[in-house]
Amino acid sequence: MTADSIPPRPPIVVLCGSTRFWDAFTEAALYETAAGRIVLAPDCNLKIPHPLWEDPARADRLKRVLGDLHLQKIDLADDVLIVNPGGYIGESTRREIAYAHSLGKPIRYTHPTPDHPA
Image (cartoon, rainbow, N blue to C red):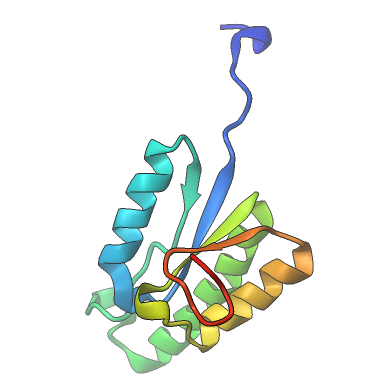
């Protein structure tokens, strides 16, 4: 394979939202991948018990690390998809939306909110 035969890079989308909607993230990732996009998403769900975050101090530290890592995923993405069943947008997601806006990233929503159509 030569550089001339490699297709252009597909768009990269980052999924943002509350991990309480883990199943909705999985579904959104499926649809975005089937649409030909590279998907970046949260990979740790701190709401599901796991030895990596069973210690509360370790969980707090990991939450901060993951939050910063997710902002870096937004840096890499071409656009942002907010996974927000029922229109729910929590504090962390608001932070991610504000960050994406500051970078001029296009933002889409899986569900309409009073301020944002789906």
